[in-house]
Amino acid sequence: PQYYKFPGFLSPSLGVKFSDVPNGLAAFSKVPALGWVQIIFFTGIVEGSFGFNDYKSGTPGEYGWKGLTSSDPAGKTKKLKA
Image 1 (cartoon, rainbow, N blue to C red):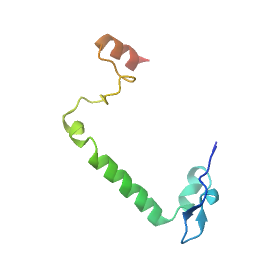
Image 2 (image 1 turned 45 degrees about the vertical axis):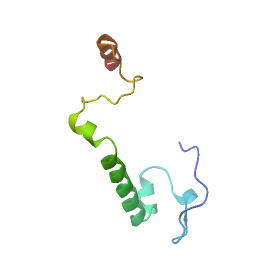
Image 3 (image 1 turned 180 degrees about the horizontal axis):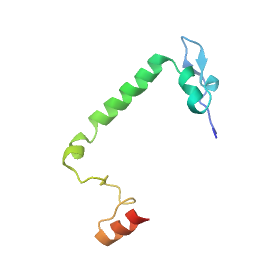
């Protein structure tokens, strides 16, 4: 379910409002092509800019959040098996 939609326009030049975009896969046809390019470009910038060295040299699955992992090996195993 969708609980909130942003007010205003998704694409002012094309007159597409956020309220015009439906849920699910039907949204693909409503968002302009350059909007998808912008989303993919931004995602690539974020993925490529932050933590890329950790990706190469870090421990797989270790994100530094102690809520997901633990410094205690037995505790970490217990959380990962849950």
